[in-house]
Image 1 (cartoon, protein in one colour):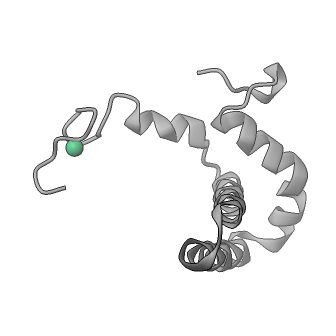
Image 2 (cartoon, helix red, strand yellow):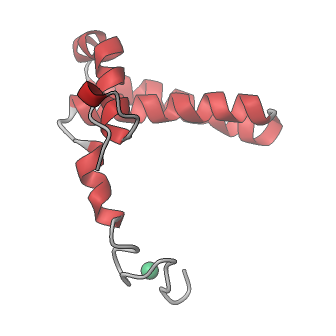
Image 3 (cartoon, helix red, strand yellow):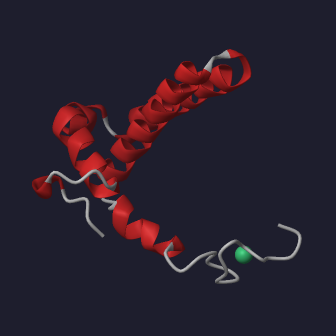
Length: 104
Ligand SMILES: [Zn+2]
């Protein structure tokens, strides 16, 4: 996939690299446990936006949740673009796109 920050890509890897450049040093000092608490706080803000916000509020809260998830991934050594390969061939269980799992 494209998306390496070095090529100016905008894929998941580029996003993770950008969040690392902005926050990783501070996030490392905070540790993953407290970072996870911030992530949950952001999920709560996203929930409020989904229930009561407008489209711009929802967009803003969703990308904040994504940024905190990416930070957690970096702190725990997860390359999210590599992890996303799990879905590259469709649903990991039935291998279909769209998913054809019964009862899903
Ligand atoms: Zn499926």
